[in-house]
Image (cartoon, rainbow, N blue to C red; front, side):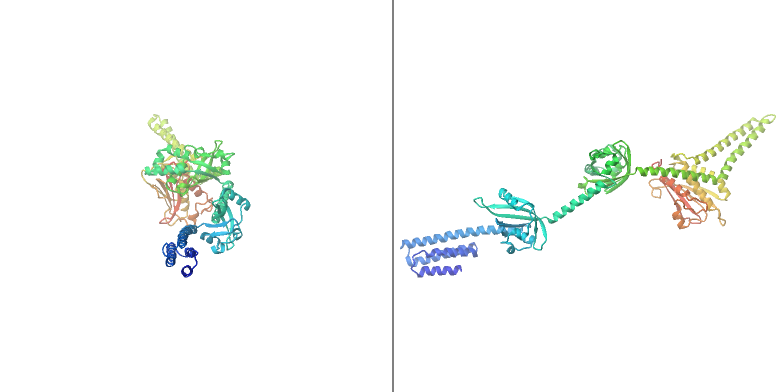
Length: 624
């Protein structure tokens, strides 16, 4: 079209005698070319128009022969140059605007421009993706009707603030093409012209629907957590262990044996305890320590624990080993100064930055402790009854044991009298007889003392014991029962056994019960020898003894043995294989052994009969 117009203008200028500045119309050609071709094309078009102007002027007027024609030609050339410059400038500005529009298309946010009547004049790609309407569908539409915008306040108030400050920010609820509603974070910017008059509004919207839903879920989760935290019947403490975590990490880089270091540096452990801050507590914790307000319960862990409290050191070691949970039993100080026994658990986070929120759960076990004390008292009564019952069964053996020294006393006394009544008293023989009287009297006294000790109801008194000596004493008490049933006793004691720490009466009751049970189990055995074997031997760690070294005692017989189902239940209270049994003996024995930190169990024999074993650790840790 521009080329055709240029040809027409040239022909009119050449073939007609019109004296007007026909060449000025080349400006229209340049303007048309400026809308369709690039900068080089505009320059080439302008050059062509100038050449056509000169070509039409020279044949008709010559050079400097007609001043008016020369002036018209000069004006036409000037108009062509001016229009070319303006066109190139407009093209440069349009290219910049296009580039800026492309940049706006690159952003993920929804951006559109609307005039003061809220009619859309620009709609970027982000707006197309968010709302679902294309640019052609949105441009020229009333934006608030298109998006069915719900404003947080009155629209007039928003527009007044926009005019006053030039900006507005807030949250809007809008409807997309599919009918789904979205919540957007909207930012409005007012554009003014050179005179300061409002021209248009640039609106940038960011979809925050997912963020709002996530925030709502977080708020709901926090509400549920707070409800559980405040209303649960378990004591919960939120503690800050960040300084402890940092100090342990630094210490792990400096020392290889952290456990030994903590054991040798109680001041470090005390400092760590003081550095644990109690950030928050629930109502149950306030009730537990007697705090009327939360502020009274906040402080450091050192306010709750006594100086020699042992479980905090263990919790430090658990944390250093990377464990995520530690539990234990301890006592805390109430505000009144009273000690409250608790069972607690600490949940350690996996990431170091989360140690500002370490949760500690605690349960008051005061009632459980009281119930345990009552249970132990009842158990002691049952154990005493079992000992009385055992001695009742062994009455003949006891009478025999007591009668032996008494008979020896009488015999030795009569002999002493005979030596003294001789015409010439034999004082040396009489002295020997009296010495035997004293010895047998002492022996009778020791037998009675052992029986009285066995029947005592006094609380357990741990002491270092020689198990072989204690077992021999028990054998003496049931020796008559062994002989009455025709049982052969074999003792197999390892030499050099270490002493153990325990209560002599309780452990002696265990041995007597096991041996009496074995003797009575062999009462109906007639086809093989009745053999009772009592063994004592050292046992190392990892062999059923718990932690550390122990002494293992075994009592085996050649009786009918235990059926598998009986072996599984033999230690249950009130279970018995005897017609007249109470079913409490072995249950009491197991409790007594476990109270010493050991273990009692039954095992199969390679031959006939049954075998019972128990261990007693060579340690006083769990006794008393």
